[in-house]
Image (cartoon, rainbow, N blue to C red):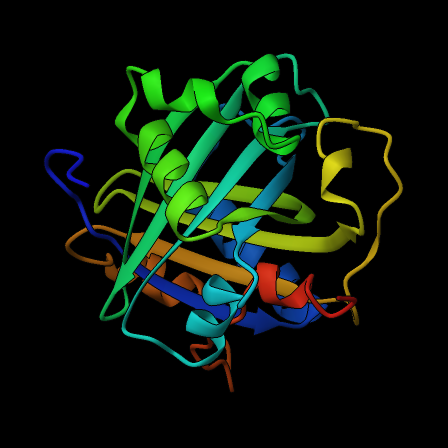
Length: 229
């Protein structure tokens, strides 16, 4: 489905050590702006990812499919009563874009519990698209992904640099809207550095995020949280 003009962004992902985090963080703090949505420099993210019975989204990621997409519902800082987003992330040849729609807690609860008929009459194209793919591709809520994000902003190039860590998962997707549901670590601890930008990555940011031995990777928090399936 079409969503109007599409802005694809470049993205690097690196798995880094704690020592890398400390040195890169120090350099970023000297040149970037803090994210206005962060509290004490960070915020918590909870996402609920969708997949079908054949694990289409997971397999597309692990197989490195050139054109792929995934749907998720997301809220922040353990507060589902504030802002809940439905998001679709698409990747083409390593470039990414994201479409987003707001959901009320009641709408999110209906999606989680399989009450989807109302979605067909929604004014939002993304909600209708998810409805169609739940109906015809068998997409269903699959896995909860929790983590802490530490964001930094650099306006030239529309650059966003984030550290993600303390990745956890819950085994029952229906617990998504319960901030106090039990979560467990998603395997071995990982610190993920992500760098996203539009048309160009300024040299000053390129220098900030470089560490010896660092390689661009394809780490997926969703795939990591599927290890207990």
